[in-house]
Length: 347
Image 1 (cartoon, helix red, strand yellow):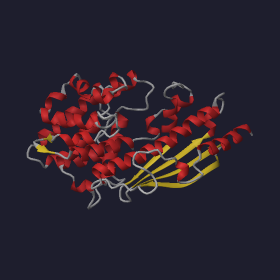
Image 2 (cartoon, helix red, strand yellow; image 1 turned 90 degrees about the horizontal axis):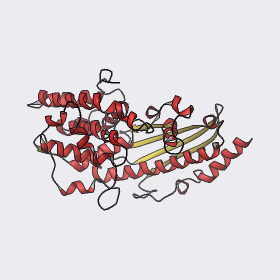
Image 3 (cartoon, one colour; image 1 turned 30 degrees about the horizontal axis):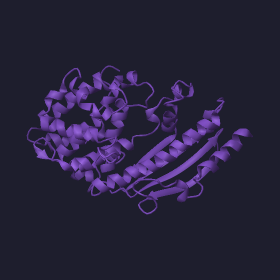
Image 4 (tube, one colour; image 1 turned 90 degrees about the vertical axis):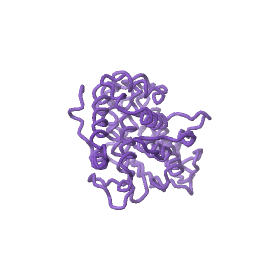
């Protein structure tokens, strides 16, 4: 893909466009967004995979997913309309546009390598072919970069709370101060929610064409994950379906299964940590109260293990992690599940 010709505008972009065009200089501002989108969408995003071929998708499909998640967490319904009374109905044009720019640019640093990719966003954007970087005023760029940098990594104190440092300074966009902490929390959570089989290739995965040592398990994770954002119910629902047939033919099938299940359990806990962090900085906008989880293990089309639904909320987990899922429900005992799978594989 060498252009954005096939990259259709998503529902959240259409909503943002309507809000932006109502501003005094709305047409000019929206044109700047369109040129930025065209710039990175043609010269950077399609080529991240050529530089980091083992990563799950960080290109146009992922960016579109993150943008859609921004809309969904704020109250856009599945049909792409704005629910009356939702946070999305109330958010200002400049704040929503800033979120879209953050979503658009947050991962472009991956083209220079995965390590510290959030730290090189500005230099990557500045060197992009059509220089959309220069279309924005310096205060605007500073704020966009703050959003992008905070979407992952660690803060200067070594913690994973990249949002806290943002409160030390005032940030401006299109001439007005913006609630940077809240917006950064929304972007970070929307990115965390961008998981699912759209981030991998089933063909490459099951032809064993991903690097077993470094990246394959993340592609397996994407393949078995289904995530639903229920903003009206203030809930995120995770549904995992692991097909044991996908492990057949491997000498290390049990080891590979253990690796995947361990990652799933860790990512469940991480998502709830992100939910708690989001509530701390954007609870008035994203008051997500819980993460629900179901997990099914299938062999030859038949369910052999079905773990009951568990709900992670502020009452049974801690903000900084450290808990085990089996403390919520004993059926989520990693070793016990692995033993059952081992017995099945050996039968």
